[in-house]
Amino acid sequence: MKTKIALLILFISGNLFAQEQKMSDAEIASFKQDVNLVSKKIKTLSTDFIQYKHLDFLSKDIETSGKMIFKEPSLLQWQYKKPYNYTIVFKNGKILINDEGKKSAVDIGNSKIFGRINKLIVGSVSGNMFDDKEFTISYFKLKGQNLAKFIPKDATLKKYIKQIELTFDKEESTVVQVKLLESSEDYTRIVLKNKVINAKIDDSVFTN
Image 1: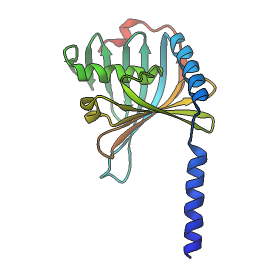
Image 2 (image 1 turned 120 degrees about the vertical axis):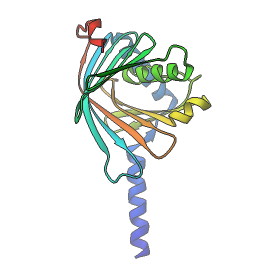
Image 3 (image 1 turned 60 degrees about the vertical axis):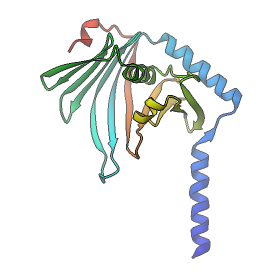
Image 4 (image 1 turned 45 degrees about the vertical axis):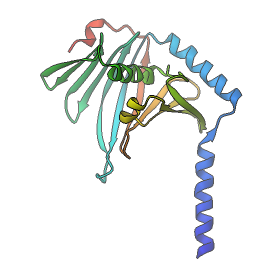
């Protein structure tokens, strides 16, 4: 019995290692170059998303879905459509919220921490987050994908976000999944699909 358990553990750990392998320095340089080239070309981006909110005390993740729209340099809208209508717009140093018709605004212009979170969210969508001054970054290879893990160096930011994980499509070098790990064991995982890049998007889309 002990032998079977040992073999099972060895098999599982072997599979995990096969799934997630550290990149070499040359692979990191190539990966970053590819992502930076693609992100510089992205002027607009719209994509459907499914968000999974994992809370340690719940047996099942909370699932929501909707559409995300980005326009450079920093206009961003998250529009939740299921199971409720809820829109968040990041625009001109403000967060505009529309909760099923109930509108509110938060001024983040004077808040360094919210400013950093805003920059982080925009960067996670475009993939342009490779700032060694802000994060400790590690890079991994997956089957058909690349993974970058970002740990904030700023202690205050770390209270809100423990780690960010961005999964990239290996061929397109674009973000396909964003995972935000909070200070506890809770996390938010966002899967992006049906991406449309550089279609015309009017600024009026980002009104709430």
